[in-house]
Image (tube, rainbow, N blue to C red; front, side, top):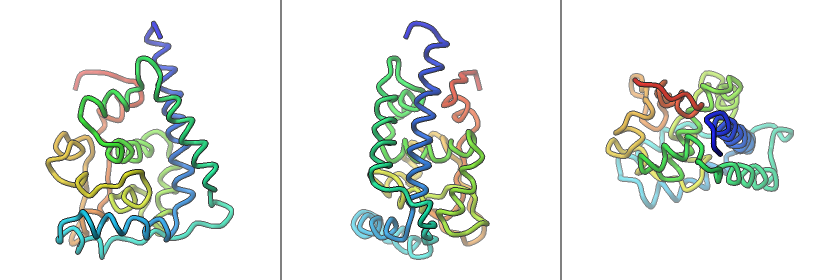
Length: 198
């Protein structure tokens, strides 16, 4: 890639592939997804986070028509991985490398960015959480949905929060993992390929 426009096209291709992978993962969300996340809570989370997890919203099943099979997930994942290998890399990979984000943190950032890129993700998040009043991502949804889930990503010293890549909007007695997540506006613009001074 030699020009800015070529990089922008490659970045857009990566975002399209990554968002398609996310759509398939959200369509596949089910109670089994939460059950698979339980060992992470039991084995790696501090006791106060384990207590918070007990009040996290359960992921409700989607309709059978919306369920994606493992083949669709694998195909979407392969397309995303292929697009990520572009030279120079897409914006999300550049940011992840610069900030030291884990796979789970990078995908959590993508989940938050998805709502700023495609308004359809709000309804998908609400369906996955089984509550139309929750058209937003949460750490609970990310832990149940994304690859290599890690409770450490929620810590205030980890990059997502320490660098303010995302914002958490807890209300009242709402647990941290159930609070709405939102990507920083400047970060969202960078992921879309718009690089400007803050």
